[in-house]
Length: 70
Image 1: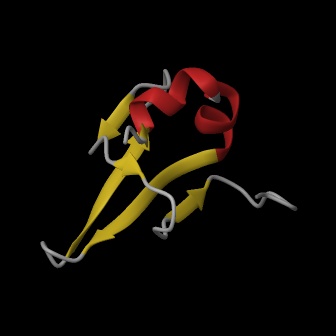
Image 2 (image 1 turned 180 degrees about the vertical axis):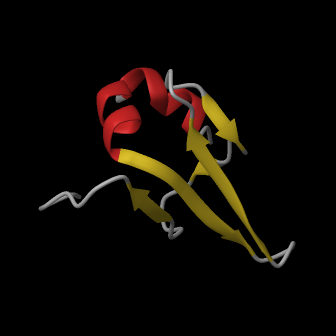
């Protein structure tokens, strides 16, 4: 099964990613640590290009409050 990664997400949602999302994190149980991915000033990926897997939880840190974000 092929999962969407952050690098593949960027072209699909460039406006949301660069203007509203500061960074994302996921917890890796095997490592006992968080992986973090953020976005540079020009929308380039900074950090780990981890897969976005259905059923896993992620922290999404926004640049500002966004009402009704889903």
